[in-house]
Image (cartoon, rainbow, N blue to C red; front, top):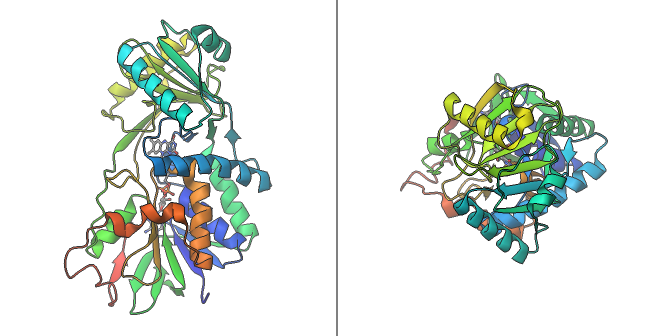
Length: 381
Ligand SMILES: Cc1cc2nc3c(=O)[nH]c(=O)nc-3n(C[C@H](O)[C@H](O)[C@H](O)COP(=O)(O)OP(=O)(O)OC[C@H]3O[C@@H](n4cnc5c(N)ncnc54)[C@H](O)[C@@H]3O)c2cc1C
């Protein structure tokens, strides 16, 4: 392969892909506009689970992603901040209890490691919890969580140790008839391939050239408390008898992260008032949280194509550009990175990525979709 591969975007997806390419001895340059990780990866709930995944393709990627995280930890010199302490869920509200039962039934049919448990077992697994009246409950022992800033730092350092080069700055792409140039400030180089892993900015990139990538970019709300004494083990989902269900986990610094719902889904109401409501729901289930206050409120957009599926693959009609947009990307990122690196480096075709090709979900307005073979210059981000 001539010239280096340039990866634009140093969130979890871009950092993992860059590291995997460099491990394969592909000379790689990673560009991120922030020196410190920004984007969705820096502001994620960062649980590792496929328990409630509806879509079969995403379910497969998440399952394989969880296995890949273990592989990546095994070969890493550093602690990636992974904890496999399982997930405990219970519901005190009848409709939520039925929903949870349905999720557990489907997960068990798929062979997922999850077992129904009773209230006594909830108390055993979560000694600081005070369930009011658990109508149904389950435990997924293989679910996990990751301290993303720790993992990202480790990926970046491993990338550098393998000879990768990281550049801080806003990337611009310039498309020629048969090549792509990438510029940051005054510096510019021709790239053999460009992998765009720019999260939400990817839609802006494509729109600039007439490709329409419908994105939901829903806001996710996370409330982070100050450090507290241990209150939860692993990840917990609780649907109290009334009000919104919450999900919580204790971070390694003792802070507790609270978000809405079982899945890392959109908070319908990304306001501080709603965050207080979520804290209150968590306090009902964990009385030890009573004195905790919200220290940080994060509202971050998720890179989510409208169809809810990732987009991964070559950009149609554009030589040398490969894009990745991955919702629920924390769980699946290391596995997707392995597949992407193999496709980019060796030209292999990963069957798991075939349903996710950009040609699937992109509507290119007539006449403009292939206009990239010109002298167009793109500034995005
Ligand atoms: C609140 C919330 C909770 C979530 N919870 C979970 C969860 O529990 N489990 C899970 O699996 N997933 C979860 N997700 C989703 C997950 O965080 C994302 O799918 C994942 O982080 C996406 O990573 P990424 O690298 O694709 O994008 P990002 O992390 O957004 O990275 C994109 C990077 O591109 C850079 N960039 C953009 N434009 C340019 C440019 N022009 N030049 C240079 N750099 C540029 C940005 O600086 C950024 O660093 C959650 C997301 C949110 C918001």
